Length: 191
Image (cartoon, rainbow, N blue to C red; front, top):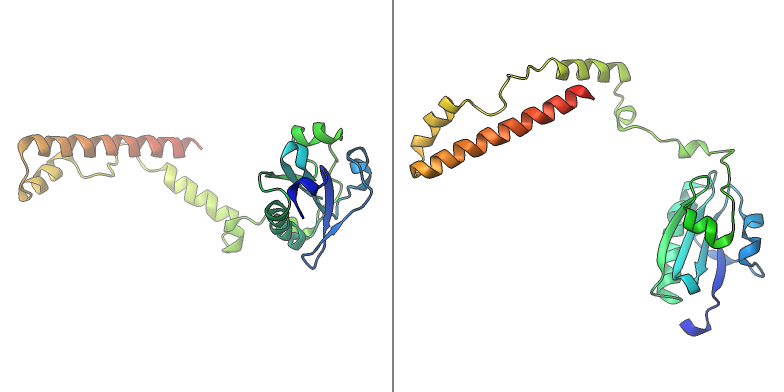
């Protein structure tokens, strides 16, 4: 199929099998009426050089994952210059809403497998343990140097054959690094 032969507006539904099924006889004005929360659609707007992936809030993870591959396949075979834009129900880009004259769809249901799992929960790290850890971090004194003191550095440097200027540059660099680390610690203490 030649790119010139491709219609300006095409809509495909992503199926669980990974296949795409073209939804026939749909116009941009009808799009709002066919969107539902368990669906993933790939929408080509050739005239705008866009391929939108619309993901309903209760759509299966498998369909969401497959939709990227489907969109890339459409771009490769139908319109190579298109930009792929991902759209989540309830968090639609204004560009997408304006393009099709849509209203943002409220999220009324979400699949259980869509729940965000924190890394700490994956490792069995309890939130109370996180509070204890943060309190220990906050007890680090500002004066606690991360980098060895200037005297310790000066003891180490003579073992390296460097000019006095290079030694001073190294000392200044390490002191600057120490100051930056102290600033980072202060920022972490504040959070």
